[in-house]
Length: 147
Length: 215
Image (cartoon, rainbow over all chains, first blue to last red; front, top):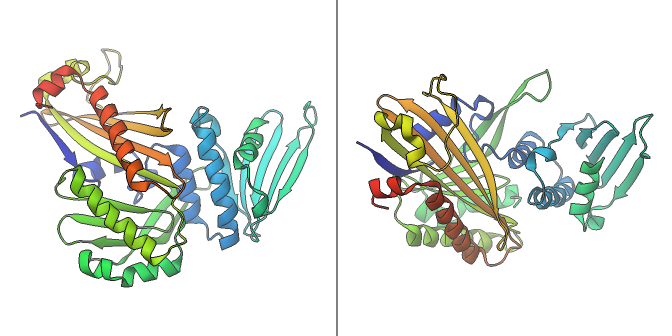
C-alpha cells in the first residue's frame, strides 16, 4: 500500500538509506549532509582543538562565509583546510593567479595572505587582524575567494 | 553557537535534564573520514552527549550546536515548539551570555509508492531523477538543491533519495531550512522556518500525491 510517513532522524530507514551512500560521514547524521560548506565547518570544529581565542575569529569568518553563500553559488566557496604543526588553522584556495590563505593563529589573530604566481597581473597581499578588528568578515571572505 | 565544557557540565547536572531527559546521557563519539588529500585519515573524537526522555524526545548536545529530536511519533508543531522553547530557556538560564547565531529545522518524510509507479514518478513528485530509458531505474539516486527565501533570508536545502526496494519506490524527502539570527526572536523565527518548510514540501508534491495521501 502506498504510504507517506514523517520519520525521525534515527529511523533505521534513514540511517541505512543515507549511510551506505555517504560513508565519509559516518556518525554525523545530525548534520545537513549535502550542504558542503556547513559540513566542512562542523568537521573543522570536531577535528581541531581550537583555542577559545581561535574560535572567536573562526566563528566570525564562518558567519562571513555563510553570508557569502547566500549570494553566490556554494560550489564556488570550496577551499582546503589543515591544522599545521604550530596549531594554526589554515584555509587555502589556489587559483590560476596564486594562493589565498586565511590563517587562524592560536591567540585568535587572523592573517590573510594572497601570494601571486610569477606571471599573475595581481600583486601579493598580506593583511593582519586582531579578533576585535574582524568587523566585516564578509569582506575578508570575499577577498579570500576573489583571486 | 559555541558551547563550553562548563555549560555542557552544568546542563548535564541541571534539573531540566534530570526531570525531562533522564536516560542515556553518555558521551558520544563521532568518526570522521577525511579524503581531501591522498592520505585518508580517520579520527574518533568525543563530540557531545545524548539526552533521552525515555520514549519520545532526544537532545543531542554538541560543542558546536544543540539538536532537539522528536522520535517515535510527531506530536504536532505546537507540542514540538513548546518542548523546544523549554530547552532554549533552560540553556539560557544556565548561560546568559550564550549567543545563538543560527537556527534550523529539518523534516524527514518517507514516501513509499507501489512499484507500478516507477515509470511515472514525475506524476507524483516535481523534482525527479532524469535518466535515459536504458539506465536501470532502481537507483539509488540522490538529488540535492538549495533555495533561498529572500524576504526572510531563509536558506532551504532539499535532499531527495530515490530507491526501488522490494515492491516499492521509496523516496526520502529531506528538507532543511535555516536562518542566521542575532540571539533574538528565536521562537518567532522558528515559525517562519516552519512556514517556508511547509511551502517547500507542498511545492515538491504533485496534485496526485496530495490526493493519494489526503494532504
